[in-house]
Image (cartoon, rainbow, N blue to C red; front, side):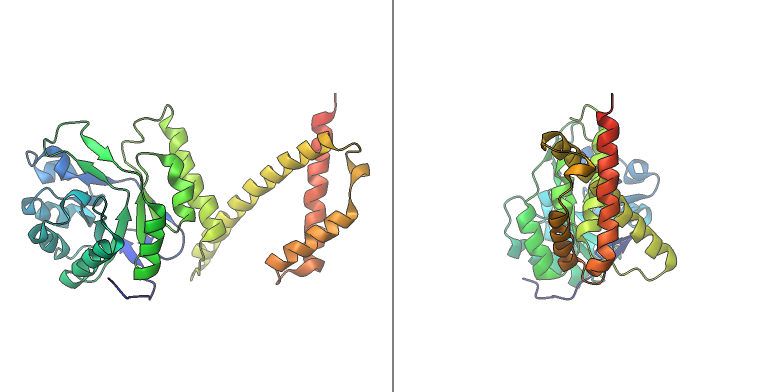
Length: 305
């Protein structure tokens, strides 16, 4: 098992996986889906983010047209192919074999790192393909988010969660520590509204990521992008708070401004100051007063005939 505790980040094309914001990867191609009967150059054509070979014959095309090579969950024990894929000079995405323990998964990642240039990313919740290569034979499995989180903490390597089978898991995956989400480029097959389902993943990366992922931007554009993510999370929370405050106003015997509980508001600010000590109560008090008043005005407007 890897004992590397230093946090790693791996560049995959224009994406940096493992440092800063969570990322979304929507370009993943598996040549195994074609059962070895398709020309790799023809299948890949334009540059893709992740590519999984069917055999060593596919590796030259992947080296030329992909940003990273995938060691697929269904063939992690094909050591000659694993060795050849790891030696391409590309970042290597190592999927966990179904039912494989974390020790086996991280051991394979270490092997790929030693056979390549060290740029290795873990992936949980992959899709597998039947050897027939017939369309519709892709089989997904639910990601084990607890195991994924443990692997990330033990190894220090970045980790991706493949949530193509259920984008509803996106928020949970980011909260569990996923550095990125893999979204099938064809879209979630079972979703009634694929675009709406995709927005669920985008919101998870933006909002949940802003709340839970530490960032250390180094440039002004990076700082502004990080602030934009925090502002998106803040706006989402403010909207939710306003909705809850409206419910309270309908339930309270005395609502509106007349029903304000100033002692409760002071206690609220004091609790918030524990989470935001650099702002402190003096700075938080006017902010929360403005938030509370905005919610009360909104509740009055909605109650007006």
